[in-house]
Image (cartoon, rainbow, N blue to C red; front, side, top):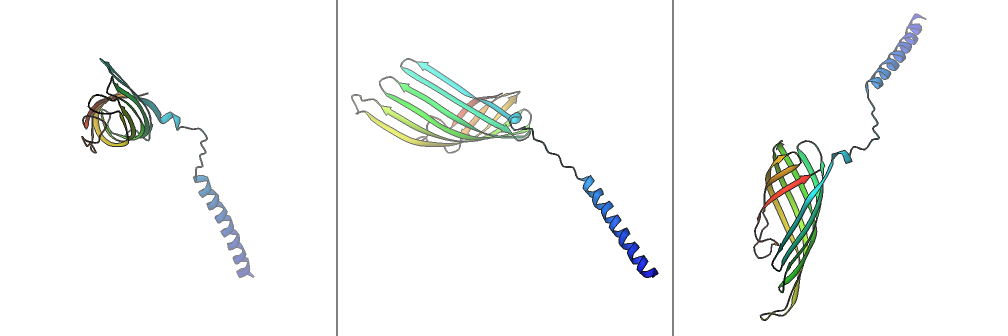
Length: 183
């Protein structure tokens, strides 16, 4: 009978110890349910505006963008681009498209960037003595790698289009200075 009693007692101890340890291990887990949305706290908006007016020449551009700060070092975002370019009695051009951007800040004052830009260019050339009027439409892809000095929300630097082709690219040079501002 002692053997049976010992066996029953061991079962009770085993059950009690199992319940105690399982409740202890459950108590050690922290289940934090955070229903607040911190996404928008990490988003910054910015972009660029451009205006160039001269004798018979007009260049207007609007380039809004938004980035998401993943952490203090890395941010990623998207941008839009709209532009109008005109040279009196020569051509009129519309540019529109978008871009993906990645920003890396290895130290607070230095910002490295990579931007993939895809824009549609629609140009209408006016007729003149040497040629008839015609239109040209094409997609232009650029991959900019850049670096800049950052202070607060402003970065001043330069970028280079590694896909630059003087016969096909939208801009006259692959090298471009920039001022980037995000709020």
